[in-house]
Length: 219
Image (cartoon, rainbow, N blue to C red; front, top):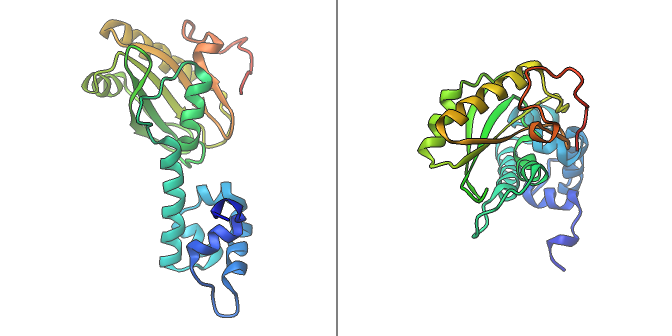
């Protein structure tokens, strides 16, 4: 009947291959899901989590981590025809699988051509739990090298709350001014939370330097 009819537990059991002494593979798979709090927890888990919480051992841990990484890459895979990002919703849908589960703040750039078709996605900086330091030259050096007509920047908030900080909006203003000088449009800045996002362009935050009075609107 195909793998589509299998439960999450059964799929994980296939990846694990076998159980432990006294625990069959289906029970072990169920224990893993409980320990990491479901599939979302599995997507966020690292090797130490799976070893400490589940005692899986190196081989089983590697298989599970490889499977979750493949899932993330599949969600981000470029189709044979270049994807066109028409609005903030399309950008967020494209980036959410890649960025929502990251445990540190990552700053990325989506490089697009004149038709807003994706040329590539670049990781510009990785920071701490709450901050990724980005300099305009790092972003636009990469954008020029990639032949960008425009750039959509994005970063995640590991807290899950996508509402931007004052630092986020000040950085966006600097990036936009630099892009204007170089002839590379900063199309939008998307802040990714856990299943929600904020678009700077949609909120009309490109022009100002403060969030005072800005409406708290997320998808």
